[in-house]
Image (cartoon, rainbow, N blue to C red; front, side, top):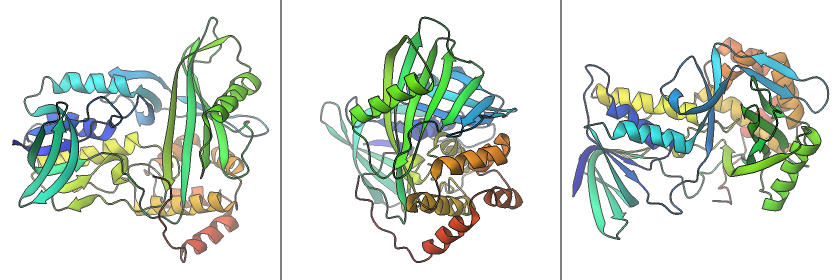
Length: 397
């Protein structure tokens, strides 16, 4: 039987971030032994993906960044673009494989962290800890006993919710023989795409080099598209909206992010906790997860270093979750037009303050100032409706 103070199940963004923090304890902090359980190559290991987030100045993963920007642009369906300088914040882009390489390089130098490639089958609560039953690549069963277990594996089914939308997207990494991209500015939300009958859509462009970029088509809706429909929408956005010519597609990415007011359990047993998206780190109104997972894992590492019970804190405040629930309901009910809603927010709220709001770092008076710049009557109606709406299971896993 393998033993450790801490077992981390899953080596995605949250699992790797927690292992990385515990491998480098703060001066004077308690050290803990860590076993990181990573699924072998195959369907249980997440595909390559891109994470974006914003933070001030330099961060612990800057060496793995593809690019970073301080100017963001939002394009309404009609009219002039909205451009904002977010300094001292920087909007950062990191690919999962680069993040993994950086973290595993540091973990290899740690005396406190071991990594094992195995499939975690069940987690069993026992006296003073938990057992993780695993199966290695050669099909041999083993058990890991740990005082604390942090499970970051995706949930098989979403918790019951009053409203659940899906943020689904398809993107191309593109290259051109000539410079076509403004390296200084991110196209954060471009609503000049055809809007679906229910929900909203937008384009998204991250310039990497003068002749390289990631361009994506994104929808917020309750149903997914076919692969051909994503390709058609993305082709229309790049060619007809952006006017890009002579581009080569060098890689693709596709994803689905639940946007839900469901309540995610952070504790499933006295010594077993969920972290990352499985623990509610995804912001319901935007789908951003990476920054909240960093806050969550930082708090866990601090608690372990101080000898406290490491219950993960809520990734987002109750006030933020309540405001997001109202926004999701207003979008899903059709009371607000999504493209107009977000365009109005970005036009009337300074972009830097709006990013702080989306990160849950604003004060109550700032939240109220953001709220009054939304369609007040539809939002109040949606808030009242939430009081009696039942929470129902989402039919899609």
